[in-house]
Length: 78
Image 1 (cartoon, rainbow, N blue to C red):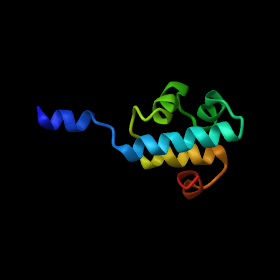
Image 2 (cartoon, one colour):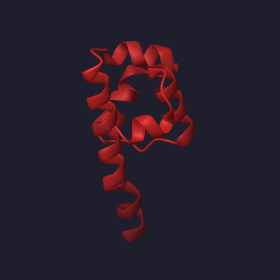
Image 3 (cartoon, helix red, strand yellow):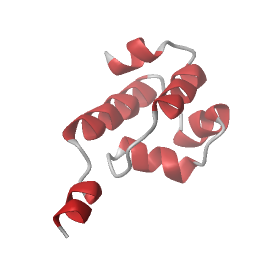
């Protein structure tokens, strides 16, 4: 039971990363739908990432950064 609870908890760094992605996207006046389309993902999944409700793989982070036309490090450090 404890193992399942740990698995369902989203780490704080995922929430922070989602906030950074959302802040960057809004600073560029880009919609979720635009970035999701460019990244080749569903807009609903991008919302979950931005809200810190879902963990993302490094490959997904790379696709999102590519959609913004910036490096992963620029996105992470925004």
